[in-house]
Image (cartoon, rainbow, N blue to C red; front, top):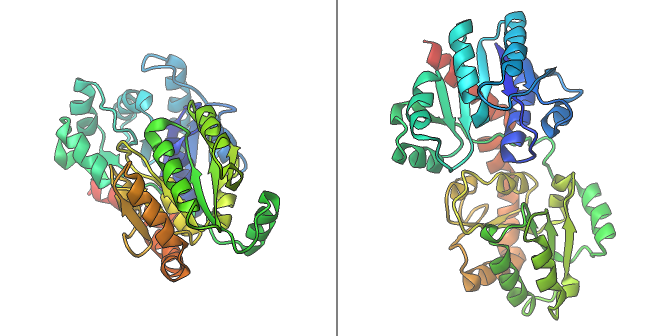
Length: 360
């Protein structure tokens, strides 16, 4: 099949990772894939040098004629079987171009925030396929007025070739971090925002550290509450057992030094990509039972599902995974679970299958 993906975002987030991973996976499966992307943006840089042919373009809004010209030219040359979009500002342009060029349109929604009333009702009806990235997100969209038969679920793909256990990388990073092989390392990676649960997690980690001398913690990411987190850590008696590394371009490499990963969000999220990435590296996870996050693990087998913000429960769960007899079977099961359910090749194949069903 032929695909033209349109994603002129300049941001760096989960939807952008989805766009890049899906495009590469479709190309790796032998499909002809091209993409209209904002030049120099993270998406363009991530796809540079791949099998995906890039067209520089941008949509400031639905009325930006420059974007229409670029997409139209690329579509007329490629003659794609599907136009594919991930970002709200391009929903209506792709729907309009799909009608004009007589090409079907597939759209993804990555946010809980509702679309405006008329868009929530019309966009899923006018696109030939409209995907939520979790069952939770689908239910939420339907409750907000989207027509249930028009909303399908397709999970976020994870590149399990890049996210995989690597003993050499583990040893090198342990050395860089000044940690020995016997350390038990809890990691947080993501935006440093209060609603992400970083402060209850900090409290739970410190309670656990007081009882487990091998426990260390590394924090990866940036955000508006990063400075406040660092200030709270600085005054702790066990501050030396925390490392705040800030934004790291290759955060995936750090999964290899983790004994467990925490995803402690206090508010609903559509999915929880870092949970799957960690499991693909044989890292069990501790995650909040909120939003679409519970769909990213096999509770009790590849990690633990916990009440958001419950410091005592999180402390006990951290200590439970400090026990080798509990942690190691979960670690051993984690990668197989991630590959079977979320690998980019599996999701790309399911995407193609569902698009084929739409054309019948």
